[in-house]
Amino acid sequence: MNRQASPIQLKRFAAEQTRRKLSRIEMLIRELSVGAAKLDEVIAAEEEIAGISNPKHFAYPCYAKAVALRRDNLRRSAENLKLQLDKARADLRDALADLTKVDALGECDRRVEAPSDPSGSRYASASPQ
Image (cartoon, rainbow, N blue to C red; front, side, top):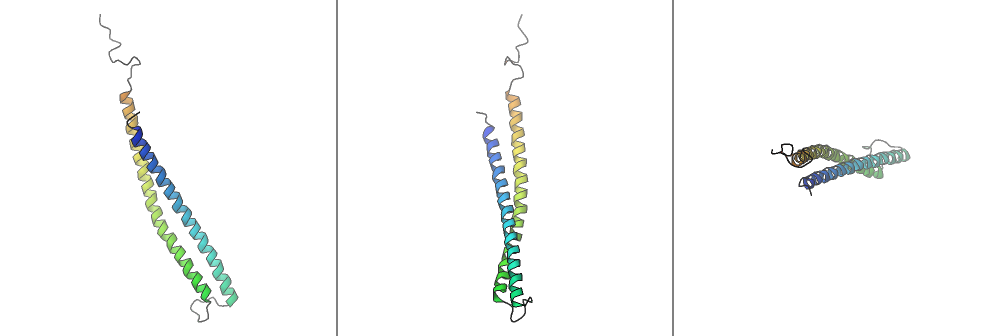
């Protein structure tokens, strides 16, 4: 087995793990955004039922206040995930760069180990006479 196969496989695995983490974070951000949009609709419906759209009004619906807090929490969570997303993108760039380096080193080693002469000897063309 080639001695470079293992480091290449490890770097490839690390890059794939980082890619999966990135896609999970993106999916969570989308889900939180959709959830916040649905809560906006609930708040609007509740305000329409009550006929009061000012949250500072003394008779503003308690349910609308609670839903607004939940919506704000979802938006805050999405913002925190966006920070993690930036870090995950940087990690993926680093992992892919490492994979490229290790792959290039492995290619160089394979060229050095492989003889250029098909007979396997450097001196095959020079026959002693």
